[in-house]
Image (cartoon, rainbow, N blue to C red; front, side, top):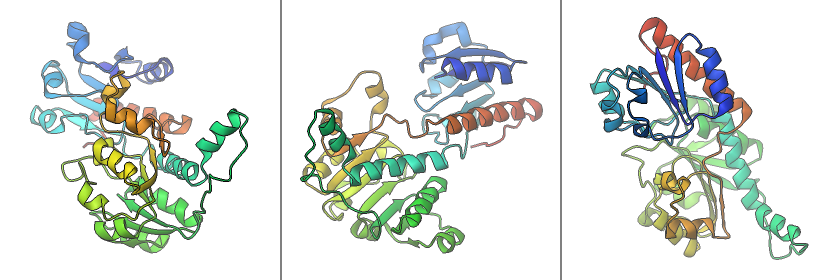
Length: 319
């Protein structure tokens, strides 16, 4: 098989090259598939990450393509419907980062609750005044989880260990987890009005895009902490700025931002700059997944998806 891998660094290429040494592997650090021209025309398997768009045009440019493997759980960067219409299988890595992203979520929550970035900035300037940076305890606070899937449930597990109260909203109810972990499912309005910290862990789809808009953001108690380690487009940047400026969000922790693909390419617009420069915002560049353990799980699962397809013509973890 001829396999083209995009958004790959050198040590990932070494790992995949060794694991898939019986195949022809082409490695590209970039994410622009079309820019490679006829160099990858013979590609039969395409391996991508979340910033590599696999559009209809990309799919049509690869006439021998049989399988698209995304090294992620999310797959909104792939035109799955069109791929399937062409008989091309699409597989993902369903659970590599559940613990990892949950831990990162709480890293952001702790940093906001304890004013860590402001305190660190001051002490680096030999300013040791802290009296105006009063933090708060997490114990007994109500955490609202929007999207109680694998990641959301790990976040709930950590929250309960810290003595927090947890409510969750999801279209699918996991009653076993509800009883085991001790949280309640509520509708979206109840979650927005009752939570002191709100954390997003839902995939991006037609139902969840712009899930939070001004009419429902207005229901949130002023000063609420807002966390998004899921997808930037769950809330528009304009509405995020408005919620910050109006005091509805007392602190914001982000691992994703709407339009971050262009931002990573150096095209940071005015609204994005307003968010990134806001003293109430902590932003990490979609790096919540990035630990040794999680990346190893990604590469292992990607390898198994490819090997499984080659051996049986059906990839594991089909979308």
